[in-house]
Length: 227
Image 1 (cartoon, one colour):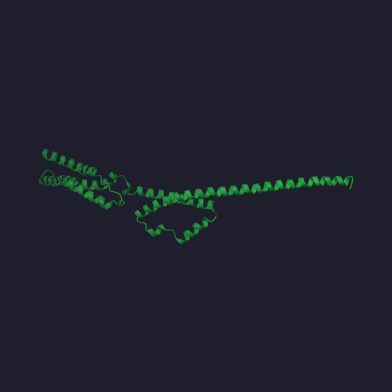
Image 2 (cartoon, helix red, strand yellow; image 1 turned 135 degrees about the vertical axis):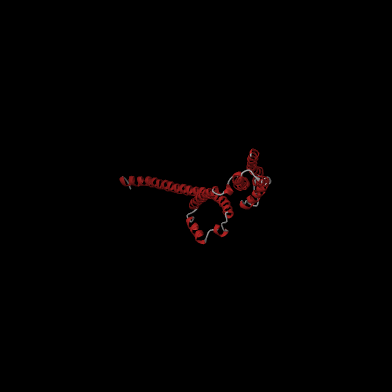
């Protein structure tokens, strides 16, 4: 074969290896893209799985502490265990892989933190969660004021006389009685965990019980002397 036919054969022979090489390069680029995409997906799943494990640790710790506080408030233990429908719904929400698990754990953590805030707000309204002195004052105070108020009422009703003197003498040991009654009352009204010690603020309680009695006694003595 000569002339144009031979030239076409030579051109085809040269073009075929070039086209094959171009197809090879395109396939190699496509495979590299697939490999990179798979590697990125695997890396993202690994990061999601690691983040989910960390989130699970935080959620477990928070829930354990929350359960202890709820038990202290008298919530039955059975109410703190998820029901079968709740477990089924939780499993369904995490069926999409590590990313779905991480999203579910973050949602659970948000709900747990909201519950913690609600518990904290409730505890602030309970005297048992107040500072020890403010809490104990609710018990020591009424006992400390009871006898002085009776003494002043007797004086206001009878004036200077035997009844006032008798009330004054009977009131002398009453601060000690008020302190003991307050000490017992604090133990009955406020409960703490078995591992903790109830702070009865002994010195503060003694001062609270003593001051009203001293003031009332001083006032009555002055009234008796002036009378």
